Length: 434
Ligand code: AMP
Ligand code: MG
Image (tube, rainbow, N blue to C red; front, side):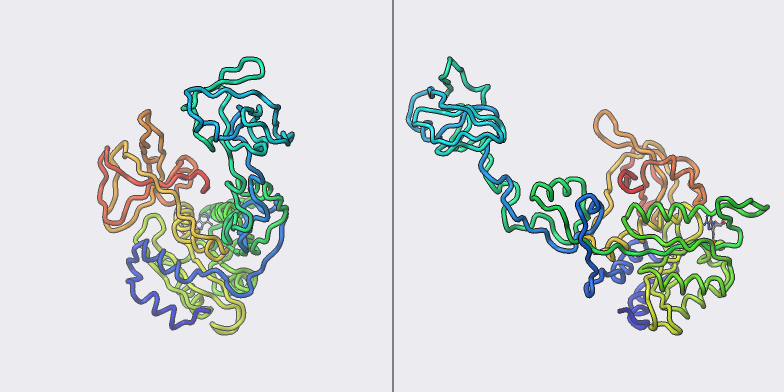
């Protein structure tokens, strides 16, 4: 469990007024540890396992395939005949082996068995010559002895998954292929970790919920919806705590409630320099919270730490806390590049770094050195297979439509200045992310 002293020591290495993105990521990584004691496990059926985190290794109870079988439609025979000399091999057909209908006797030395893909290799056989390599005359086949080597086109039992070996490891986020793989082992239920619970709310007197009427100076709260969606995609349990007014009592109530009910608390808004000082003071009275100015755009102000629900820090329930900026695009950028990995780690999932692809800037791009910029990009694949990328246009951190228009983040590194057309840049595709 974290203590105030350890947390301050960890953060003290860095200048909180200009924290490089990598440093923020590293600190978060250190503090967002998966639960190792009292891991709560539930057993779920295959249909409910998709996207869940495996709590234990799944060991294969059988060999897959369970028996040696043919990789081709052709003729099965003993590979020994290939070493007899002579440029052609002639064999007579003793019978047929189909998938699910084996040929059960051992063919003679000059015999073969007509075999289809997936069928059990008959006793005494170890090689399959594909049908397109043979000439068939009635019940006899001929093929060149150099066309094939002994043992070819045979799938060995246990080649895919061997009995007693782990088929999937603990920490795996179960994917489509995994469901099939588990089914292929005859496994219908797996142990998964209990989902992480994340409570979130928006702060701001100017915010209205969908369904309310807008008065002058007010706007609809969109962050709660993007956060809900991004959290759902990560497979966590969500608790929506609504909009919290900019006053100490409301915020304190929300933070305590969130901490009692969740493993992680995420708020948006209210952490910028101009925001009321009570935020800082309150958050620090409830736990250990660092207020960072991250060298990134969008997303500069960010609060991170641990909150407690009790009377004092260190008492009651505790939760990891992320106070994200209010701007809608900043919420998404900080979620993917700072929060996401922490949530996966706490869920017990093995690390899943974001996919980064190199692309060519198809136009000049404005970029200030000394901060990482997460611009919204539209990438396309050229005929030559290379990705080219343009920005969506104005990059204001409130322009949420830029996220809907884009298909990738353009990640422009800290040290870099303006980008020329033709320069190489890195992109993180939205596919699978958003
Ligand atoms: P703040 O970080 O609270 O100063 O907010 C920065 C900007 O983001 C302000 O223009 C807010 O109106 C806007 N904003 C804050 N929260 C939300 C929200 N939940 N939905 C949409 N816009 C927001
Ligand atoms: Mg605000």
